[in-house]
Image 1 (cartoon, helix red, strand yellow):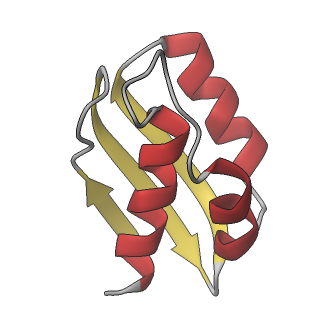
Image 2 (image 1 turned 45 degrees about the vertical axis):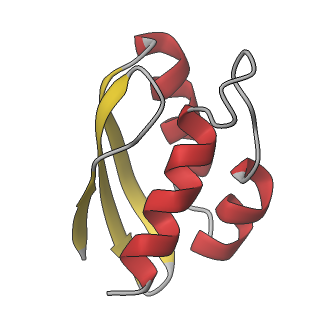
Length: 82
């Protein structure tokens, strides 16, 4: 399943996901800190959606109340609700 999510409260403008049978096959960000977002995607590739959400949810960036990893967890939740 291909899914696109529009994050809120962070520098990145879009998150693209490729999920198959509950496993993250691919991930990409538009905008944000390029090295960090590439790193996040490399780390979650091959993980189950549930494991990735558990590790990323609630991470804060400079007191914003969210972060690119946290927004990725929200994107994963939204994708699974489809």
